[in-house]
Length: 92
Image 1: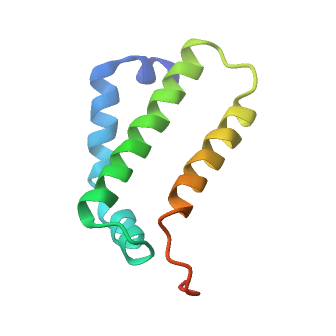
Image 2: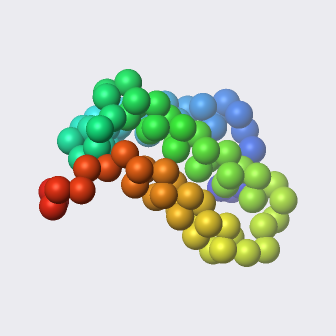
Image 3: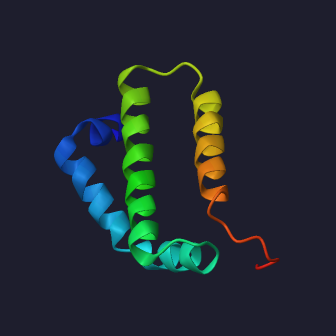
């Protein structure tokens, strides 16, 4: 069932829209802990959400044999990218 949701572009778009309904907390946190403006933080949000859904779609379609390894690689990629914008002043 989940696989069919990912492969349907109409539903894919609705999933992004639904996630965007709850973006304020993520964007506010990102802005308060980084040098990103609202527009930049919002762009990062949409890039991350679309990218994560796209890779899930690809992995489902291709019957990925090692999802944990792919997920770990993507998580490290995202973390390294965000890390370059974060403010390191002991904020929590």
